[in-house]
Image (cartoon, rainbow, N blue to C red; front, top):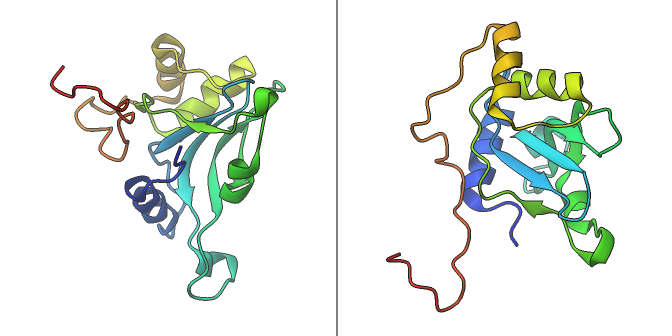
Length: 159
């Protein structure tokens, strides 16, 4: 599975290029299919921001990181490191095709820190959003940077 298709890379790089601190809407969610580790990512740092030369591939992601140990936190993670992880059963990290963010990262962070893990329950996120006085984003096209799951070979897309 491709963790970073071009459309997601473009959105993450655009967020990472914003010069001031911004409470971005998450772009992508990664998870360990055999464990509790989850990452909700908002930015990809441009290589020049890391002091690397032109032509270096962007690798450092920023977002809410939860390794499943009860203490989710905002931080950085290497895309190469995510790609190299093999959990139980030898499965790698996956991208959640169905993740549709409704709140900026601060709401996911607040809810996760209150519960010791990343949560996606609408009621729990709405509770944190109310405390932070942040409104949800409309459903309309919050998923423009998200890819739909690949169709199984031989499947009929007309459904």
